[in-house]
Image (cartoon, rainbow, N blue to C red):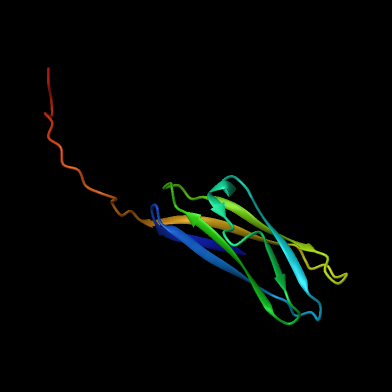
Length: 116
């Protein structure tokens, strides 16, 4: 599964990954970001999520688009044993794409085109 972070250059994009628990036991996961651009992604609400039985939980991933080239990382969700039950380890590919460039400001300057 791939999660796309698209927006303007310098924009902050926030995505939530929804995790469903169909079991009758509580599941818990630790989230880890790895890869070439993992440092540019963050987990602002923490790197753990606990999902009660037959409910859903969310993990929030945030990314600020700093460069024109696409950023790539992997979100790994590793299960913690709760009630003696392990959930499956899950991975998500994270990618960014710049859709437009908004100028932060404009500056006028005057300079000669050519000088000997």
